[in-house]
Image (cartoon, rainbow, N blue to C red):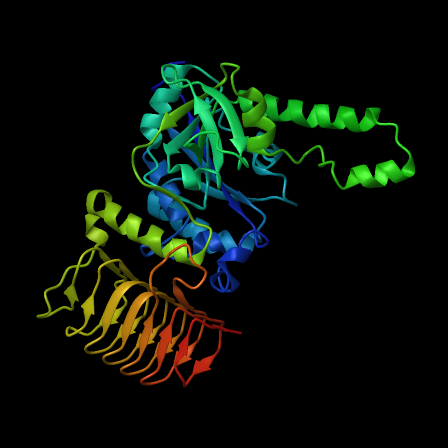
Length: 415
């Protein structure tokens, strides 16, 4: 089949409520994939990138959240992009490869010749079209997006060795204890349908080993804690590692930005990266203003059309303001995410912080942090409906939902 006629589908793994625990208190309110970065739900960014893939037939979101939590978003994004987006709920976690295989028949309905697989909690420029071209040139079963990082941080991810000439994946190991390589797995892949046979092989082998085992009841009890179910297949340990060096898997290196969105602090950094990308991909989403009729805007800022911002406020850089937010006179916002229905009163200052839904920040108050995205208290977070009263200072703290602060706090977690 000519490549111009080949159908492509995309599968985005969105996880489930047990997976977003490090994202609390923000994931109390909304599924992590729907948390806004640069004013758009987290999952919107990979979906928008998929829209640019030639001959894309369908996008599937796979996870184990309840369907009702995604129904409204899936409906609106399908209409907006004029592209079918469908949510598929796993009955239980099946692993990154097992989840793909669980919905094999649905994914193959359009007879695609290529299948993109993306993790939702990845922030990057998603160079999917150029990745697809490279994948076709390689002629293998799969191609994975990779990036070079510092040797110190590499061990937090899947490290790999690739042939410098052919880009074949030669060796892969997940979060090794000793340094292997500064090339890491970005969590973005493209496969031919042969991936399903590879996943089935893992399941069959595991089932076969289970049937062959003849153990005492005590040994069986011990073994049960170590043996994974046959339909639980991990992409990294069960597919990538065993198939490395067999001329089936290849790598495509990105020179652009890449981050993994594990914590609220990282969401602030990733919001900044996406806002910067909007300059090239969606400049109409960025606000502008010189302090005359509109607020003074510095750097990259997103303001929802329904938000009301006083002309004397100064906003940016790296600020995202969501729906129905009210920003009073003289307010200063720097490097922050302001969620729906928040009120920030006159002369308040918010820096390196995330302000939760329906929260209120009083006059002359300060909500700020030092901006270390990786530190537990490096970003100040106010959960839903938190009230910071007038002239209160909140520094490097996390405040759980429905709290009222009438005294200043520093480096505290308010439960």
